[in-house]
Image (cartoon, rainbow, N blue to C red):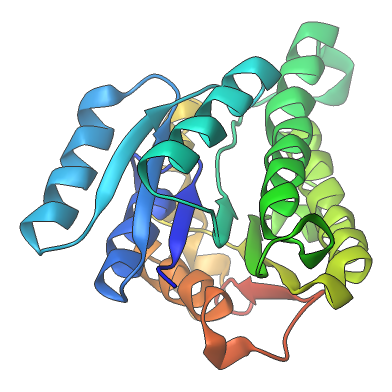
Length: 248
């Protein structure tokens, strides 16, 4: 059976690196994007240039109707889903909690938490033996911020990733005997443009000296961990949150 993988937020950074690596390992890959079609197209072109199978699929994971349409497109064009990487997420500009608006908080939780729940729900409906599926794997993207708290910067983002850790553990145990494994990867300081989207383009390099390994990580290093968790090599691993953070 062909392995069909959907990666949310797959047009750049960790998502793009994961899409490329998974395609090289034989997955047919659906590269989701919210607002960067050219970047997503470039990832798909790179996969196809190496002989792989890939499509782009637009959806804001914070919008249920768009998520349902995304899964329907994957069903129609690639077949039954066997793997999901919940990678889509947002940060916001640096702020204290006493400066945060309800609009900011609702956006953060809608995309980072509810989006991951709804995507996982749709994946389980396709993968679970309880629903006639043949099993599958889900990998959620957390963050070392879930352990560190993000004080003075983005406690809301850290809290959303703390929710992802708990969600991972609960869902993993819920579907463990239905052929589905659920794990999370918790990256530390990674050299991607998510820092720029939060108004701090130099943040990773500035904080690197405080990492025990004295450097930032790469999107490729996180992708390697994600793809291992997707693979049969991690067949007895579920309900696990794997730190890829250089000891931070």
